[in-house]
Amino acid sequence: MAYHAGVDAEATLEPALQKRGHRLTRPRRLVWDALRSADRHLTAEQVAARVHEVDPDVNLASVYRSLALFAELDLARESHLGVDNASRWEPAHPDDHFHLVCRSCGEVQHHAGDLVEQLRVQLRTRQGFDADAIDLVVSGHCDRCAEAQP
Amino acid sequence: MAYHAGVDAEATLEPALQKRGHRLTRPRRLVWDALRSADRHLTAEQVAARVHEVDPDVNLASVYRSLALFAELDLARESHLGVDNASRWEPAHPDDHFHLVCRSCGEVQHHAGDLVEQLRVQLRTRQGFDADAIDLVVSGHCDRCAEAQP
DNA sequence: GCCAGTATCGCGAGTCGTTCGCAATTTATA
DNA sequence: TATAAATTGCGAACGACTCGCGATACTGGC
Image 1 (cartoon, rainbow over the protein chains, first blue to last red):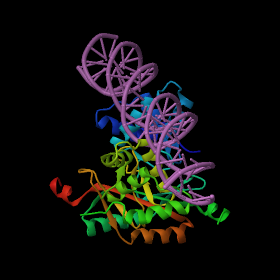
Image 2 (image 1 turned 180 degrees about the vertical axis):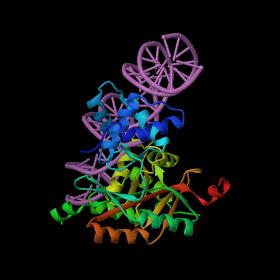
Image 3 (image 1 turned 180 degrees about the horizontal axis):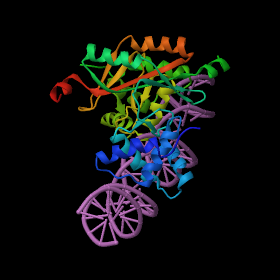
Image 4 (image 1 turned 135 degrees about the vertical axis):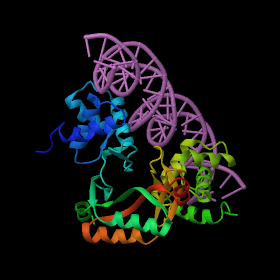
């Protein structure tokens, strides 16, 4: 069950666009829906594939442009998860989580916790570094793969 | 003052190569020297530029091949610092440090601390996730830039 | 030290992810 | 509904990186 395309999604998307003088267009709506309905990080290509299930006429360049715009408006976030050299995208959210990238199965898990917040405080107090975004990528072996080949 | 090209560098490089049946060649030595003598992360292109100061005939493809080999032998480490979509390289070292990327001046600071080790322990005990490499990239504003434009 | 055998190199072409320029289209506003 | 500007689709271009192949240079055995 999931997700009502175009309901709460646009409730976030439309005002965010309009506030900065951007228009709500079909490609943007579809890209946003694709991002929102995904339960994991997507490459631009994967976003395009999902968009094309609904409307094959949306151009790949527009997908890229939409994603870049969303990032600029803090609606989405880009990360380089190092497996290949393609960017991966996800809807923006508080960055209180890690990415756990399994080297065996390639799966990317999210893990929420207080550690990022701890870290932010330490950086501010000890380094005077005002952390804006914290991107924590841990690669290793997930529990399933670890017990499969110890 | 700096660094004696080809002294302690090769003391690490040569046996590491030979142990796995690889040869110590001129391009590899120069790439290694370039990495070792840098005080920051370098793109492959930047490594090539430094190599070319010594020997302009070393091919870019060989630089890439050397870097890939060093990564495989755990002599070097690749990371995606998100500024553009080029990889950055540095000599391998224990990963008990963060990268602090300043959004204003672009400077990348390293910061060592016990937090990564803490994190590793938490991941193992709470997630059953066996962390192999921990890549922590924090973007924000360094102390100098933060006070320049608060 | 020289030779043989093979790892490695240089080169140029090819791939992949991403961006660009521009005419045609679609959107918000008057 | 008309208008003006933002946005699109398209195809070509770009930058980072990889590959295949014949030429070169390294290492171990003589």
